[in-house]
Length: 44
Image (cartoon, rainbow, N blue to C red):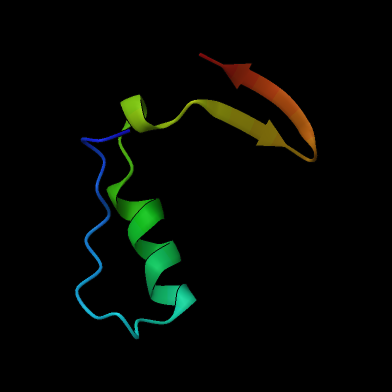
């Protein structure tokens, strides 16, 4: 989604920090599918 740019300020940022940004900065309109224990439970 073009409007959902993830702010990565340091090109050497570790994956843990990037994952935290995804979790804390994701908005409902950014989520297309929801999976629980390997099964898709919701999609747009």
